[in-house]
Length: 187
Image (cartoon, rainbow, N blue to C red; front, side, top):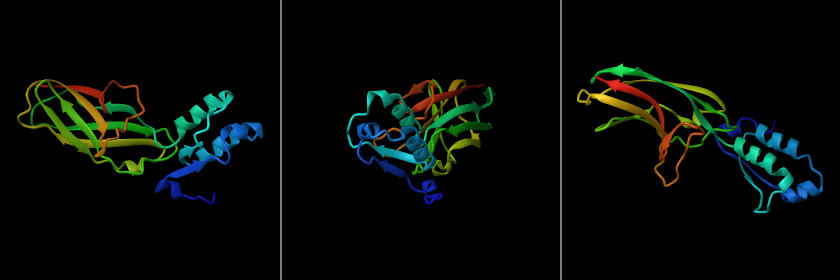
């Protein structure tokens, strides 16, 4: 309760008192500790480079998988067909299944890729605002008047100006950091 909503603007990091093996030896309530830190919207945990007790490995793995942000792509909607110069409506339905947001506003980029052309659109998304829960992005994008006819694929990615790659937590087909989310024919 004392933490308030600070987690919405800055990460919460947790450093272990002693180490996990000592928690186990002292019979500390690991399930309660895990739940409390998730309720605090934990972004990271420092276990002090000491191995995890093998009996707890699954619990600790599940804990780590819930920390921070985990953006999934639930659906992508686009028209099946369009013509060059059209303005088309697209909708992305995403969800942060983690317990915290990303604390950077990295660009979310939609690409329309054809055999000979690729068109890139930066979506109006502020990842810092994607708190845990569902999010919907609607956009109207203009297709170039000189877009070649053919089959196109939409991909989406979170771009970073640095070397790190930020992935969506999804099983969608991926090429590098981009995920295939839909197709459209240009006539």
